[in-house]
Image (cartoon, rainbow, N blue to C red; front, top):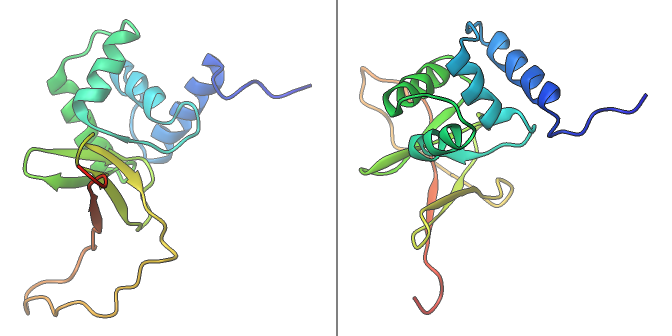
Length: 147
């Protein structure tokens, strides 16, 4: 028997259910709808809350933007997504949660994974005495040549 294609609705829902269950999150209707958009096809992605809201609405789901933000925060707190802040105007949510750098295209406001193999961080400044470093985010801002 052959495996169903990655975009098959049953496989998409199964992936979303496993993803939520692995983090101990109850699969409410809204969480499941958002999880299917994030991981249903098995690919990693970088999304904004606004993009996820629009994608959800395009699929006929009734969900508010506030619910999308709250759900993404819950996913982030559960370790399912990583919040990447590029500038003060908004955040991206990355389904790939390991430490890795990003490219940010200034002209299109797109965030993409950058190759980890070429990144070297030789030394970090010591944190204040009452703090530990939680993580280091590397965002490399890109501008197209001639722009």
